[in-house]
Length: 366
Image 1: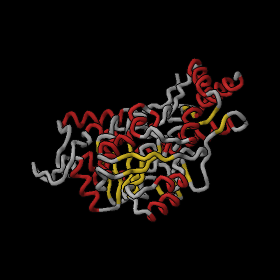
Image 2: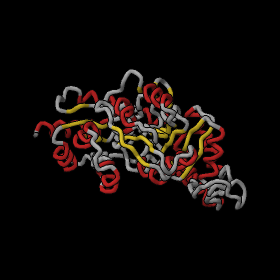
Image 3: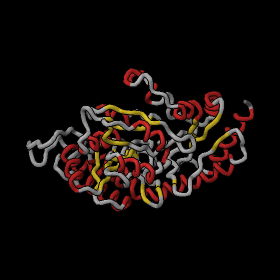
Image 4: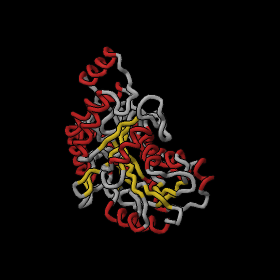
């Protein structure tokens, strides 16, 4: 079976983890965090070209902490796509605010700016664009709308580390950008996340929020939780950062090869970068009719395809009760047609040909 994603772990990560175990410093409750936390944050700062990076224990924690730092809470509305992992919406609810779901564009599965405008109300306080599958959202139009309506922009870049819009890293356009280092992501900490910001005050708040609101000892100054990233996880991610450029290059090569092999397969709509966008190719997501049958046939042939996300968040049982009248036609169409294929760095050229051939055979049998 070719899995949909696979972390690339070798002796470098093993040695770094063993050194943490030998030192016995498994975590650090100081404001700045332990040595490996600080090393990881410095590497991410340099890569993203931002003033501050604050490491936390998941992408969900990154989103939650960012909303808290921005002062989002009870009575506020936060605009976000429904076509995303549920963590984006869960973070809004955890902060005490109400999620308002926005439709997407079918061509790249990112937020539809026209629909965003229609859903803004007097209670709207923030917007969370999601760079889904590593596809950058059109940030120029979004920032224009956000500025006009005084909305804080908090980017969900959990799937898009290494993706750029007009040459600038996703997650660095808004007041904060959130990243995930879950096991399936382009780089991994096992579990982990990070927040990028150029705002000194927000960075100070984030460091307190990840550590129960404390600065020194038991001096809780603002509301916070335990969102600290363990040193073992930081050690893994620190090594992974040294591989990031190479991992992105392999994914790009695999994605380009896949596109070449599928370009004349008329029943399959392949992903395409726009003039201003460069993908990290976290997922190679096609759109196709009779998606579930194609998926079953490919899995029977050892290809680990996956569907992200069906149902979309607004149609899950919990969120359906919160917004029962929500209609998002492009989101709902996409949820029934998308299929993600493996292009990660563990797939070789033979594997890419095998995946493309299996897809073509499954489509031909429809």
